[in-house]
Length: 284
Image (cartoon, rainbow, N blue to C red):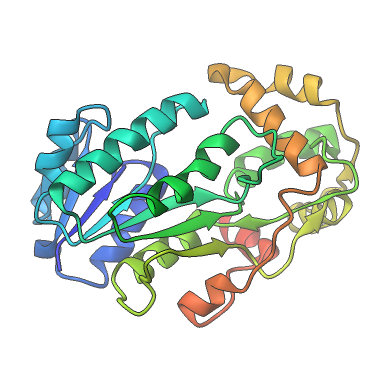
């Protein structure tokens, strides 16, 4: 089996690559990167390093030809139009290259009534793959727990969680757990079922008072819950132009659309995902 992983130098892609390398020989793995010269360390480990540009169909066809499993981690563009355009190129290239199976990253914020800026893309992803000639599996992630770690000092200073989601709960998964599940599905034929959609979450979700209690326990500082408005949150965290996207995500959270809990991770890995408290303790 020949595997190709895109986004291999990014946060999730690099961890997926690490997981796949633990399960199959390096000689069977290719990585797609924007700048080949920046991935010399990967080439030194015996991996085939290929140039990838999602908007360049010919380059994509060349990289994907001869690959049995294509792990597709989308770009970090902040709007659905850009990502849908990217996906159209990816699908066209994968079909021309006759890729055996595409394993694509999704997100729980994909409901028809979800106001998240990228919900249109994540809702389009399974429908577009379903109408293609490709065999596919999608793994949807809950919210990443990892940003809570660098965010904790600010929450301690504020003495409050400020997410504007009201009484609703949020579900989490760690990047590491997500990557392990991706690697397991990518390399396990029984899990890599055509049309299958997994949703990765921990074994419970958290209302904001419950989240504040966990953060208080692991930090040793009292943290409560005092939400700001959606506009205030967007304005506060608009670094890199991400404010509106983040605000729209927590608007979805306030509608109860980010509280999904499944046992899919356990089905894949044979044990539950790392709990939020244990994850935070391991990182602090």
